[in-house]
Image 1 (cartoon, rainbow, N blue to C red):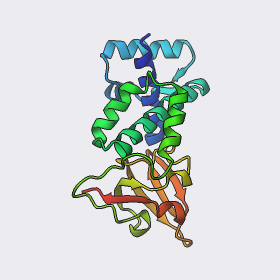
Image 2 (image 1 turned 60 degrees about the vertical axis):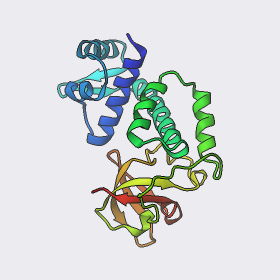
Image 3 (image 1 turned 45 degrees about the vertical axis):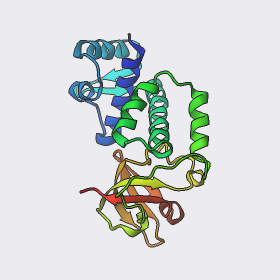
Length: 208
């Protein structure tokens, strides 16, 4: 079994499950994984056979071990994408594609070091894209607004932002604004509550 396709299948099941809930249909996995149909189908059969993935009438679900592996792969992807986009100034789409390639070879230690590096404010070049507004934090938007994150300042204030999928280029929705100025956002199918201190460091622009 191709290890890259295996990891891509697990990552696809995890992200699709987070977005939609419940089992994931084979067609959704095939659309998300950049590999031949026969290779993906063979990989899914192998994952079911070794217990990493479970299959029911609606599609595929991760086992406990499968979820652990998928979350590790997804974390690598998000850290790499954030580094390439935020620190090196790459376009979001190009950064995501590059992260898909690199995530299969990079070590856990390197990812941990990259994550810590990103979290250190003032180190390395920051992304500057002409014509894009970065002056509006999440506190300034209204409930229901669909946004794209353009910048996160001082990631060290919350080490879990990257793991939660809150990275530049990600689309989010403002779900609720609470009485204490906290903000609830939806990212990748999950609702996340952000304190006003954290929300004020996340900048975004409306999705047109």
